[in-house]
Structure formats: C-alpha cells, structure tokens
Image 1 (spheres, helix red, strand yellow):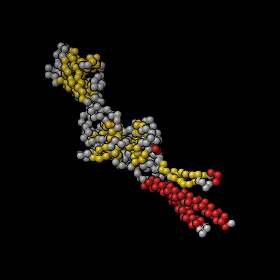
Image 2 (cartoon, one colour; image 1 turned 60 degrees about the vertical axis):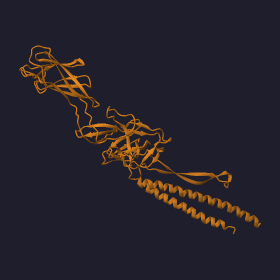
Image 3 (cartoon, helix red, strand yellow; image 1 turned 90 degrees about the vertical axis):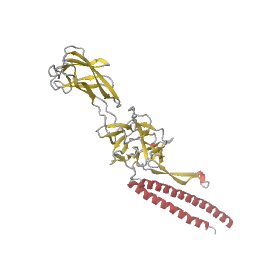
Image 4 (cartoon, one colour; image 1 turned 180 degrees about the horizontal axis):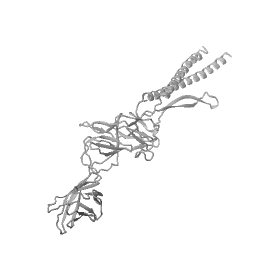
Length: 435
C-alpha cells in the first residue's frame, strides 16, 4: 500500500513540477514582453520632441502548445511575445518654425533623401545611392548649398537644368550654391526710341532696328524690325519674317511727333504701339505716345536722323540672396532685384503600406517588399499630401498616454516577477512532498 502511495506522490510531483516550470517559462516570457513594451514606450517618450518621429505601439501575442500532460488534447498557453507596431501613417501636428526652409507634410507621403558616405578633397559631401524616405522636413542649407535636415539627410528633387531651363526627370540632391546666376526674365515688351527718316517728299527710304530680347529660358535673341518710308511723314514698321505683321506710323511734319498708328485717331498722350508676333515670343512694341517725341520721332528741318534703337523690358542682372520654399514643392532662388526663379521641384513618395517600411536612424525609412513599390508624385496629386512652408511636423508621441501605459507595464512586469517567486516557493514545497 505504501509503494502505491509513493508512486502516486511521485506522479503528482511530476505533474506539479511540470506545471510550475511551465508557469515559470510563461512568466519569464511575460517579463521579456513587458521589457519590450517598456523599450517601445521609453523610445516614444525620448522622441516626444523629435520632428517627424512616428510613435510605435506594442502588440502582445500568446503562444499555445499542445502539452502532453493536458487531458483530452487541451491546449495550454505557454508564453507571450511582444512585437513593435509602426504607425508611419499617423499625422503629426504641423507647427510654425523660425526656419524659412523647413517643410511639413500634411497627409500621405515622404521626402526623398540620401545620406553622405564621406567627403571629397574639397570638403564637398560624397552622397550614397541608397534611397531613404523621411517625414523630417526641418531642412536648411549647408556650406555647399545642399538642403540637409537635422538628421543629416540630403533632400532630393527634380533640379532645373541651368542651360535649358527645363526640369530634370530624375531625382538628385537639391543644391543651390551662392554662385548661382540670375536668368534674364522673359521679354514681353520692346521700347523703341530715336529718330527715323527725313523731310524728303519721296518714298523708298528704309532702316532697320535691332534689339536683344530674352526667351522663356533666359536665352538672348536678336529681334529685327524693318522701317520702310511711304511718304514724307509716313513710315511702315514690320516684322522681317512676316510682312503682314506691321504698323503704319504717321508723324507730324512740323514737330516730328507720332500723329497716328494704322490711321487710328487717338488722344494726345495715349500709347502708340503694335503687337509683334514671332520669335522668340510675341511682344508689344512701344513706339512712344501720340503727340510725343520721347519714343520714335521723325527728323525735321533737314536734321540727320539718329536712328531708332530698341530695348526689352527683361531684367538681366541680379545677385543671389537666398532661397524660398513654396507649397507646391517649388524651390526658388531669390535675388536682390526682387525676382525669384525656380531651381528645383520637390516630389513626395507614397507607399501602399507605409507601416511596413524599414526604420533607420534619424527618422528615416527604406522600402521593403511589404511596403510596396515607391510611387513618386507631385505634391497634392495621386494621394500625396500637401506641404506647409516654414513649418515642421511634430512627433506623434502621446506623452500622457504613454506615461499611463508605462505604469501598466511596470505593474505587469512586477506581477510576472511575483509569479516567478511564487513558483519558486511551490517548487520547494513540491520537492519536499515525499522527503
């Protein structure tokens, strides 16, 4: 009878010890999981002031194993595991910044950025080819004119070709050096001045006026106008490439002032002009004013005409003074003449699942197979968000909520340690059962 009792006690002890050890393993997994949660929470709290930071949460999952000691194939919960869940699609609060080149995204999308892998002999950065994405738009210019955020990532965009004035179709780091040249503005008006013709009564006189105009890309073009005498006080000015694009100008025989254009009666002092159609673009040709001699006039009293010269309204000089950012993603170079010119365009990249991006140092990410293929879009098109200038996107950390969760994690951790200590006591008791 004693032998049977002893065997029963051994069986009970074996079952009890197995259960207690299983509980210890479960409690240890609980300790590890709460430590994981504590790490996630501490990271969120530490980055509560980090621009563009996306707070993460901790998800818990239980693991169930078929235990041979469980009756009827019942499953026992053996452990728990914690995983970090990213929330890159959460919108942070957009706040105004004193940095005029800072940008904040509202909605979907990331800035395209690259990292420097070193420096060349002249201290310019050597940029890597690995593509990164970030929401940290706190950009400023470095000594070489590159736009770099506070984490050291270089902003990419479509740069304007200085020679052709067209936007590139490939992404490259945006650089606006202080030596950038001002591109002459497009000519819209030619102003003519000087004297034409003579008081001769015969027709057949001719002259040519040449002027420099600038096209939309800032390239200089020579524009010519032909003058043909009709009679002693009437001349025709025309486009040499299109004789029908012309104007007939009648002058006052005594003063030499313009009397009319194309036979139209106009009040004294009104504008005398005609529309030039052709290369490099259509322009207004100002001849002066009706009754005035400050523009084109007729030489009188047998004086020798000075000839007619022309000048365009293009602004041709300017000194670089800085850059400005626009809400459509345009990066503009500003000049001391009050003009600004496009030097680059910033796109935004979207993903089918931004929460599956791989996190990197400095609030940056790389694409993964789970995140989907990067889709590069213009700002505010095809699902891409909008931009706010002189603004930054704040961290999405909920400081109050995370501090509350920290307390819960602390209590859960303490409870798991209590399970371990209790299991130790139960093991000591079980081992002493048949001693």
